[in-house]
Image 1 (cartoon, one colour):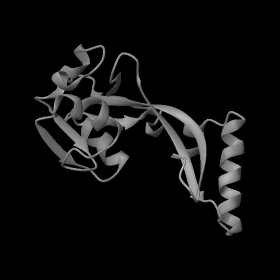
Image 2 (cartoon, one colour; image 1 turned 45 degrees about the horizontal axis):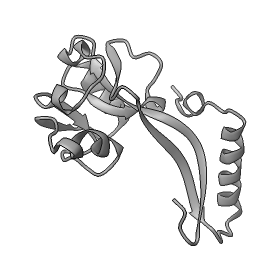
Image 3 (cartoon, rainbow, N blue to C red; image 1 turned 180 degrees about the vertical axis):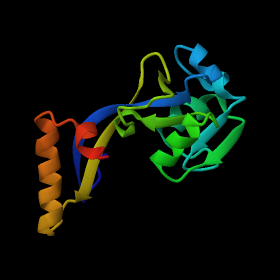
Amino acid sequence: MDRPGIKHYRLFSDELVAVVHRSHSLTAFATLSTSTFEDTTYVSYSRVVEEGLDDELLFRPTRRGPAHFVLAETVEAILDLVSAGVGFSILSRWALPHNLNTIVVLPLIESGARVMWSIVRREHEKSAPTLSLCEDLRESFASGLDFAKVLIVT
């Protein structure tokens, strides 16, 4: 992401995973692909397939996707719908709480669907709070901070 005028800080690597109810038919598969969920309901932030890593890895190569989409505006709402058996979703592993109860987490592809989380700022940013936040995050993750433990507050 090297662009003129932009400063880029890599923070941590994470995995995109599928989340399904423990009795969902998708739990029969070791990893998921387009063919495994084309007759299912996808619970997402959007009712259409949008550009992103899940699209690049799963939907775009085969030009196929889930049969139905259900809109949920937050991770909590997505997890509630998945827990109720409405469908499955694809989320970042760090966004998942540790107590999933009725939800099973499945890898998307055999090698894992990795994503690098980063923070970017304008190269000539002058705001002290912005500069401090970027530097603090960079240093914290460089020293091994577990983002999931910091971010998820109940």
